Image (cartoon, rainbow, N blue to C red):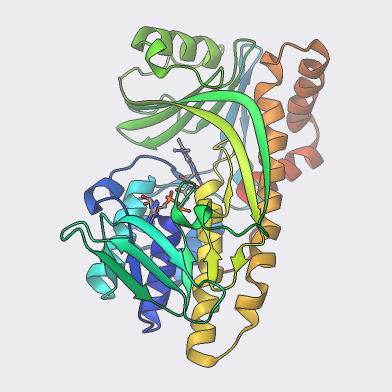
Length: 386
Ligand code: RFL
């Protein structure tokens, strides 16, 4: 269920092994191929996609990043994470990855996918013959699909989350802040990701392509995006990201402007009978550290491989260990996001004590090699092989 990065990756792994699979998606193909979202992929995830024959276009087109820059107290401080770890970040917009994965799944590997389905419901998850029902968008009729397993990859607001039984434990963390997420039709203003820590609030700059840049501005939760005019946005970005000796920001039309109420959640376990959750359906991490799509891919690699091992060789080890194996990385990334959020938002929290300690934490990244190495390792993600 769901044709996002998680569902499409699971589908591709199943099809490569000749396993029958149907993907149900509530939106249209055009819509999912254009929905702007993530852009940063960790090196282990790129390798995982490559190993499964899913990274040809990505390898040819993605940009390799080696540094990020923290801007605070009017100065820019470059942080060379690739020098410290030997690993990189890859910038490849999520809509391009989704387009590649749909094409490979449906057009090359012969996978079946139904777009525009409505009123999706799950049935008999505790039996060995679960089913999914939905309304067909063309005929308006209800359809029932029986299957061996349901992969719940339908994101934060899908039918999987709605079908969780009472035994599901949901841990939630609210940051108590909002981020105005912006997509600007403008070339990046620097060669790397910028994090601006300012008394007015955090600001972020994330290159997406030579023509497109994502920006973030901290704002009150629930703020009205329409109260952020073009001028107000660029004024705030200039102030919060300004640094001595750095060129001015390249302005452009704002294509997307939405307020995210920053929060995280984790569903435990990630398996309920024959329903296996993956990606945002199981855990959400606010885009503090660009981790969400990476976690979705991690789950999908483990789930796809485990289903293939079981369905082709009767090996249950992968399915039995799936939830624990995913949750180890999920909690690791949750903790890092919470930690990094304190650095981003300390300067504007209004509490002079917390501002002081968060600034000390930030300065330590540039004075202590041990602190820098620890940050770089977390920022790039643990480099297991998949
Ligand atoms: P998705 O991508 O949400 O896909 C779920 C799909 O399921 C469909 N769906 C249903 N299908 C069938 N039945 C139903 N009942 C359904 N209900 C929904 C949806 O239409 C959709 O197509 O989940 P998935 O695959 O788990 O992937 C997760 C990632 O999309 C998400 O974590 C990232 O976008 C988060 N994220 C980032 N992650 C990174 O790793 N790096 C980044 O740089 C990054 N930047 C971001 C982000 C998320 C953002 N937003 C929008 C919160 C930047 C932003 C602004």
